[in-house]
Image 1 (cartoon, rainbow, N blue to C red):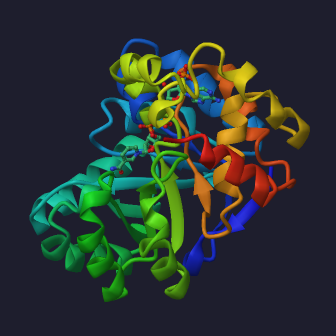
Image 2 (cartoon, rainbow, N blue to C red):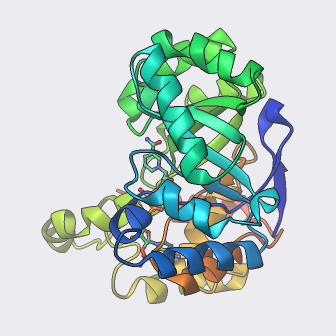
Length: 290
Ligand SMILES: NC(=O)c1ccc[n+]([C@@H]2O[C@H](COP(=O)([O-])OP(=O)(O)OC[C@H]3O[C@@H](n4cnc5c(N)ncnc54)[C@H](OP(=O)(O)O)[C@@H]3O)[C@@H](O)[C@H]2O)c1
């Protein structure tokens, strides 16, 4: 596992982290043991960066249980999705309780909710030592105008945004601004849209004859065969190729794929092998998108 400095936070985060949205939201209540084994496998694979949120079902509670006695091994990121100061404070206090910790390493404003109203409260929580660093997230590239407005205030040290083969709009303005301001960049959803759009676009892909409409089949049946050329670059699976494609961007601090399968943790962690995907291979991958 390779590590990168997450902007001005100075934190050294693993290039591959773990997200807990889709997976833990669905499983934490019904299969707590599986969630705990996924987190323990992540630690065994030298992953040290975990992202969660109060709105991810039972995720924070189960994460707190999984990290009992292991808190010092991880850099913990959570979020707040409240639009007034008092609720924001209560939300963070509840997160601390569920996560069984005295402090959150990175507290992010979830999808920019109430960012103007709650930031002074979050700064106060930082002064009190309950939170070490502040960041912002947005899942929708259409909101990048607001994201950049917030970035320019200098109140936040990280951004969390979607970035994958079919969604690279952050490259235009957001990532250059992050570089200029020395902000950490966390990549959310490296896979989900490639999968969830599959059924939607299957028909379009079949009729276009390319089989790659919007990346909808990149992780579908036959994908590993289609992308076998990636094996020459240390990628045993298409998923590893997609992660390495993102790691080729030095602005990225950490990618946080989620999974409901323990075995995926090692697969995804192996994408961080210190061998960069050459620019021509990244270009070849990107040229496959329509
Ligand atoms: N606004 C926000 O702040 C925001 C929004 C969205 C996401 N996030 C964060 O970003 C994290 C990741 O996003 P996400 O959970 O939406 O989606 P994701 O990580 O892009 O996709 C999760 C899906 O990818 C699959 N997957 C994982 N590794 C794979 C591999 N090597 N090959 C093929 N499939 C693989 C998983 O399936 P299996 O279970 O079969 O492995 C799972 O269904 C979230 O968990 C959350 O922490 C933040």
